[in-house]
Length: 120
Image 1 (cartoon, rainbow, N blue to C red):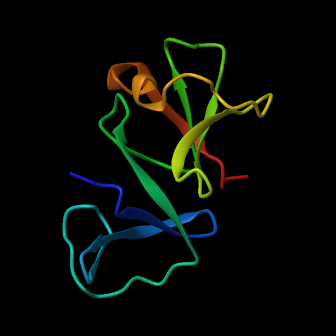
Image 2 (cartoon, rainbow, N blue to C red; image 1 turned 90 degrees about the horizontal axis):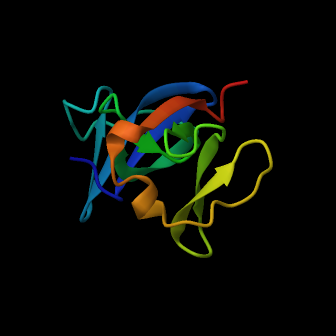
């Protein structure tokens, strides 16, 4: 299970692995299954939301998602460092979703990852 201390590692638009912080230790994985202390080179890292989508895939900041509860809207998962919490921002209008983030993800069967913001 991933936690708030887990990250997706990227070099621009390419996902190169994952990082886990556990106390004073840092672990790395290329596949989310096999973890080691061997570092993976990366330029960007995206925080894990601790939620999954309907395909049982972990969701991270920078993911573009959609919910069957709001089928006409797409959202970007964003982490606000000042508020220290995740937000959903409408892709089209760039408006912050004003409902509970946790309630939005309550039923993973309703959530689908469509793409990533970092892919052009």
